[in-house]
Image (tube, rainbow, N blue to C red; front, side, top):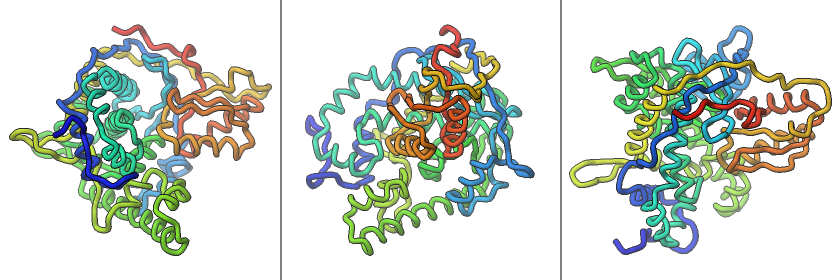
Length: 425
């Protein structure tokens, strides 16, 4: 290889999943990120709110609507819901939301997962070798990443990948009671040894994982096999495949209509129908017929005498960090703040955070929900996940929060100083 990491391509962006996977694998060398030791948060205060399900059902209104619109042919009895939504502030001072079941592993898993993700993000930022390899990417390689991935910059791609692995861990904790693992550390190690992270990367489609996670639901069941590890139930595998096929078919239908009947170019079609296609705009809309995609990080490559993936290195380190952090973390419930007052809105109440805002599509969606309620949006910052908007009253603010939650987002009203984690251990 030359001093530049390259990909053979014409000028401009080009959709090429195989080339994109190779570029990411070259960048991820020489192996799993190490970085500085994790921060052990110690005592962490959180607030918890019980989810309100529809009468006679085990899902909330938001969960049921998402199921009916985007998860066909999945049925409600294949879905497990969280019992509580929680909020807390992590060791970086950023407000977070998460979900847990009171009859499973509780609030520890979302908190420890977030800290493990933060530690991995720091390792990416501190990896000078990675920065050097990124600097050697040639324009052709950048064109492939821009044409194939949702997040075009390599560091952003790796950060989102780490966050996705963390989501998988926290989300599967909702069904921890279906496994033989009784502690958070055992559970994370059991998922790792069972290959569940790879199953998510190969069998799920991206938006299903992100959207069901944001709504506190998971559409799979686990079964224990004789060696003590767990696998997806056969029905779960069949349903995931059917949902993925339906999503690909819908994306192709939109693109065929746009480029055929409407006469748009591919780039014009993606720009016009981005909200319809959501995050599948490149991953599925441009997918060749008959190809069944998997996460780019799960693509196998040969290293010496062994096969390896970018995902395996990330998951190894994530589980190691999570287990260490979970052993030094003490979640403590506190009384939530009442945000539904009737007086005028305080100026400080203009600011809130949306921890699960992860891309520009999220920014547009959140802004659209607020503006549809005649709430003026001053600023939405993706990096800090901060939103500044002019609410008419605390009640108006609370209703806006509920509307965002119905859309699968989980706004946090507390300022970082309102709930503090304990000192790192």
